[in-house]
Length: 261
Image (cartoon, rainbow, N blue to C red; front, top):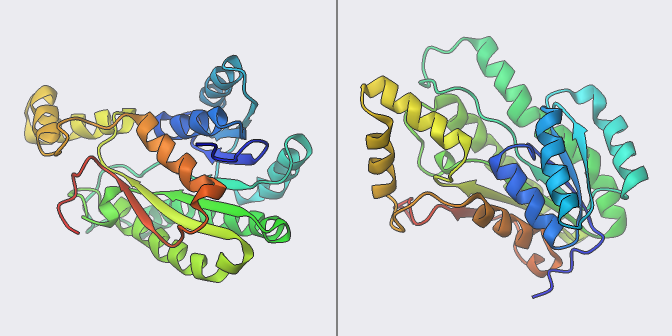
């Protein structure tokens, strides 16, 4: 199936990491021109180099999504290189594990700014040109915690749920402009983040990490952690013109982990 992404400009945040990198590579494989954005320039360069080595177009940008002062400058650079953004993948890092109670107000403010306010600001900045062209894709990566809150991820559960409400509302506002807005949520995907969370749980419970991982994969119907590329491929489909009738949705890529309907 031709996903009709050739020549489209895709901006992927967190593209130096496991999920973001997989999304960037999948989009590039469909001949989109990919802007690999990450706070860690070296990590972004690694992803961009892998894409270019496969014969596709990419360039890296050091971009702290929480810095709202650089949005216009970065988008102008993208437009002058590949053209205006057609596909925006909002993929932010998560906060450290914490309970929901007892967190200082400044901690909530810090992560609201980096995980919510930043996503909304970048999206607002790309929407006008998307409307002009009658095409746009806003895809926001969150967490399975928005469906089934995860223990000891109080800040993450709360703030990512805010993005679900925002995306659903946005989808109704921009649908007639040829723009879709969807949320994708990973279950347990084999990235550095899931390794970190397994290690933290093992430390809290004073158990071997291997036991935590075995228990975790045992709770997943397909019996394993997901491959990041499986996640990236779903995002790429949602980014394509083929997915023009999918909007306002929350798509689970979780191997059947979440038991609720």
